[in-house]
Image (tube, rainbow, N blue to C red):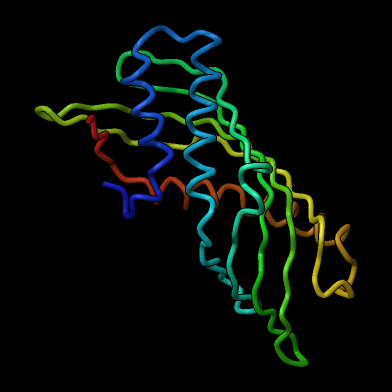
Length: 194
């Protein structure tokens, strides 16, 4: 099972969709899956998630900004062969990062509004044990682009342009580790059929 239900919830949605659409992939299936996953993630995105930062200079939360308006999921290239589901996912979302920045002169409340466009290739291996169906997901590739739209306090050095460059540079430098950490979170999970 996944470490928490929310960690694998999007994989479970895909699992339900596969069972519900057990037909060869076609253009309508990609669109149906995109709509299903978008609806599920918009609902889940209304919760704030604590940011776990390895650098002690910032502690805060990440939350979706108007997920019904700014969160969209597109699934492409859906393939089901033997016991494996493969697909590409593109997610665009607007997020707010807010918290406390530890600076040499003391702590400062800080926040940023960031647009994220991410794409990943996902593979889910399906297995059966008795009457139970299980999945194990792996992200094989991940790409993302971040754009900082607003920054508070506004007088942070370099403003939104510099922060956009910094965030994208850090992502690229840590991409391999991010994919490894993401895959380490996902353990075998049960696909519950009701």
